[in-house]
Length: 271
Image 1 (cartoon, one colour):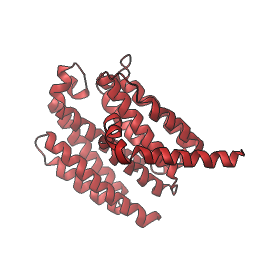
Image 2 (cartoon, one colour; image 1 turned 45 degrees about the horizontal axis):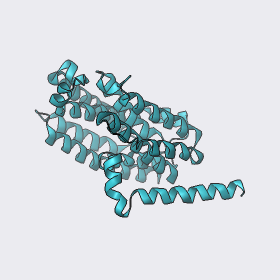
Image 3 (spheres, helix red, strand yellow; image 1 turned 90 degrees about the vertical axis):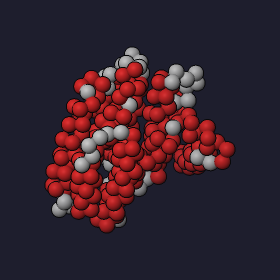
Image 4 (cartoon, helix red, strand yellow; image 1 turned 135 degrees about the vertical axis):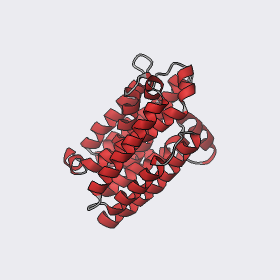
């Protein structure tokens, strides 16, 4: 078998595995083990940056799927003390995807494998360390946006946009920590919010939202729709006095809507 035939065989085989993961009677098992509903919307990051970098490689989407499956399943394994190590499956599939993506994407993927491991592994447990728990989440989801880029030059080219994504993810994480404050405190998970208090986290959220507005004005000349949607989004949540589960759900849903606006802006400019 030639190398070309082997590559084609692997591609079709991986596509078949991917389809099996999302179809028919296996759907409930996959959703439960890999918490697909918790992260499916983050595939939007891969779509956005693929258009931005003109790199619509389907295997970047497969890779993102397996990386997210790994991150959430290893976290579930340690948090819920599960008996079966389901996270090994997406770990191996992620590594297999390295055959079909750029060297730069591989380096980002290695970070995306390391970070959730340190986040969840009890001996390090970044999840239970203030500041580190928040920042590691923000970095992880921002790396998903960077993954389809093909060089560090592209990262530097869009540094302000990447910073915007990072801060949005930081706000999302702080909201999550506020909502889970009582539960985290009960199990001695010392997040940033548990360590410094809800009021401090709210101040941080509002400060970050103001920074998002500032960055959006700086981006307005190049990304008009991105800037306008980010400003409106930030102003809306700046006006919220309380942070609760309803606000968390709104942040997620409106965030997805803003992501669609980003997509339209990128298509307008680059497609």
